[in-house]
Image 1: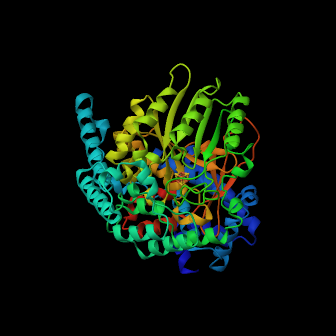
Image 2: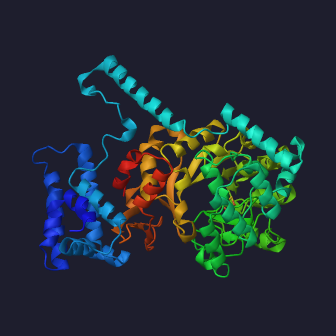
Image 3: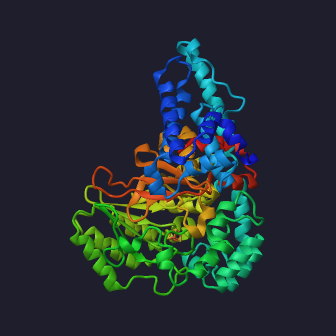
Length: 599
Ligand code: SF4
């Protein structure tokens, strides 16, 4: 037996034995099915009442997943056969699979046998839950309150790793950063506060690169990636405001902020390689197949998207629309007037659309007159009950949210008729500043609600990192709305976090916050079809493990039980690889050990 299988077979010697003794694959499958059925019923029959309920839940889930991954049906859908590899390894000592695959199966076997490594969580180390059954009334309440207090304090220990820009020490740091950038550019505070100055000074070319290098120290990889992007005209740009969020020295604190806009070399190379076919290769959401008319995208019955401006002040590396955005403010990013007219007419003709999402790019890059015109046109369509403005401006150039712009907004917020709201995109508490808070306040003073869509990926997925973001956002009046699982688009695979991590975050971190702080819904965006709610087990299932250890999921489209639409098969990034990268960032992997048991 190859040494690398030892822990796997140790986790379930019975399965090892029955696979080893099976002469052929189908016999092995039959025996394993019978074994799992019997095991399942041992627990369900509740013969000796020895299995605690929390263990039972984990067992039941893992048995279901194990049955899933050995079923012929799922083998056909996933185009791989985990049981074939298991059987081969049991018979010959090894199989052509990665260590990631073996680790997945090891944890599955542990869970099946009631030995999932979940309790006690590392987060709760040293904290013991009192036996509340022994107490009654006020005494019970006081015991429980003291215990909950300890949990709250422990949360604070984690949360304090992720300061926002509202913390005095960070405010001072940002003031120094700003001064440094202004000195390099020989500009004034007045310049800084002007959105036109911010727009005109976006760092996107060789000169901008020199400014960035003077303002902060870049890592070797960052420097290589930016240089390559500029030399090869791959979308890249950073606003002065966003640059001042970065620390002079790179560290874990500003990691997510840098990673958001500094393209890694391999990403730039992928973009270069697919310069000609990127409209197909990188259009993960298949917008080309969901756009009934130029500038319009529709995936749902009652809401549709309009894209009047196709660029942003700065470019997020993981941008879903990296197949069409070519650079900040590129010439031609604004839609032609006749295309815009045709798009708005389309909305007027389609009476079932009640909500329009005006996005891009970033629509707030357009001038006030154009924004006013578009809002005014939509306000005249009686069946449009709500207009949503999707923008990252409060984070990239908060100065753009002027009183004049907000006065325009207020004209189209008319309770009883039609509402207008803003959907923004914070990804990290370090992006939350007082300048941004003032911009949000200005918007809210005019009646608009502000919601956030977070993209959850490797950079912002450490323990309680997203919880810290939720708290910072609530402090400035932004409501968490969606939290998107970052798709493992090939060009940014190292930016992604596994589906299991977002499920773990929702259960073990978000759940500890008060309800009004965790109003976000965790979603997976299914290409062509739209959002799938991740928390509902009815909406997705683990169907296989690929030989390289990636989980393969079947996502049921939102149309399930409404229209017969085929599920979407998605191959995730591997958990082992993800954990390895977290460890390299200094994380204690004990903190994540239950991730394997979220399916
Ligand atoms: S703000 Fe949105 S549209 Fe603009 S680059 Fe970032 S992800 Fe893309």
